[in-house]
Length: 607
Image 1: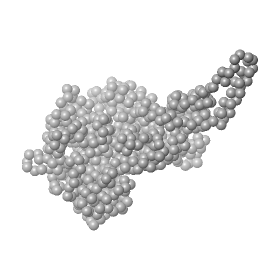
Image 2 (image 1 turned 90 degrees about the vertical axis):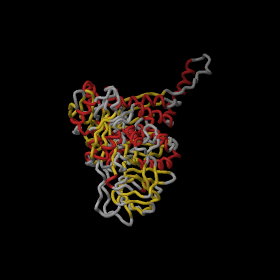
Image 3 (image 1 turned 45 degrees about the horizontal axis):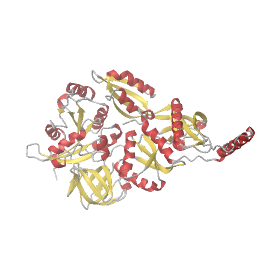
Image 4 (image 1 turned 60 degrees about the horizontal axis):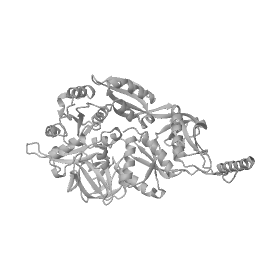
């Protein structure tokens, strides 16, 4: 194993699509970690979903051996991180396993909103940051702008910046040398006991739980008896190793190294990310400081389309949660959809990725309800209730006020679009709190906005208004009171809980009319007329009518007295009225799928 002073642990952080995975490819190629015949673009992006979308969803560790030319071989542990705001928790976990970070800036786009947020995370962890300007081979590269923004926005001196091209490999060797020179090696700890931080996990059907570990003190070998701090579960290590970039077994994981351990654990519930693992024979007294608890921002119901798949969906979610610490779920039931789960996500892209992974990796056929956030509902009695599902909202007469979650967002845009973007913010009930110039051509707008308003299509609208140049980053900023109401959808006078939502009173009419129109097309005609209504607090605000199927009762009448025809029509009318009173409207599963998918995907945002 490498000595401590020959180890460098670092990660690559940047805004989305600034070239992190491509730069990692060049590093793997230069260090000879991957044979040329095995090279492919975005090698560390293992999921089909990551390749299709061109984004990194999961952090990917890899160990590289590199000799800068002085005859000494260094061990470089690299972690490639996601760039999208919904996956900030992945970045914070990766940073906790490193001593330094490469900050990547796109030479054509400069510093963007998520760049600022990720630099803040690195500084909080006291990491050494190496600023790197990527894509210098492109004709649109603007190096003076990048240098100016680095000093003005990030407070990083331009002398420290390196220029590279992840595509052509220019400057990558100089960058690896800078990593060895500038990033400090892991420090030895004087505290007794063996300790390792679990910064990620995954589940393998044949091998069980696989923990990704940064060893802080001591070492782990095959056969070592270990204990987890969070639940006191003991186990024996079946295998230890490192990533190259596929898993490669090794004899030992020593202090300062990043790798994996496979304990004898079969249940995904036995381990959790952020936990400390220690040796039973040489235990640590205290757990290592983990990373902050992640609180979900967006909630949605996930139900199996076939109710017989409920247990399989439950097992699939447990395995997925092991690989994604920010995903939470709990069982719930719906009168319309049967048994399912209430799931929490960090954002709409995160929600979409989880649903897609359930469909692809676990072959689950699922249906999802309209996304919502957690509301603080204060009752007149003084009691506070946390509501994430409109079904559980108390009676309006008992409610004193409803507070909705607010976010503080930073929007970085070219100066020419400032008026249009401010109009967009105000149309979403946002308040602009600050505007500052980033450089001669860009401004950063800081605004407070309700979280619910960015769920629908805010990000898409921002991208279209700014011709793709706007970037967006947000963080929670507490709660504030708002005029929120529960919107109920009634079919034949009966409320359907799957379509209920909590909306601002100003948008209730438009939303109610939209759902009624979709349901009118989705519900098949019955023998009697059906009213589809949207209601707020008992008051009907929108209505659509599904026409009845009619039998021609006059077909057998050839002429004759008109009173006979009237008698037949009256008789039919009475029958229809009686049928409507006792008739039940069974909304088919296809109607739920059609309406909920239309809500979810036609208005989707946050990508």
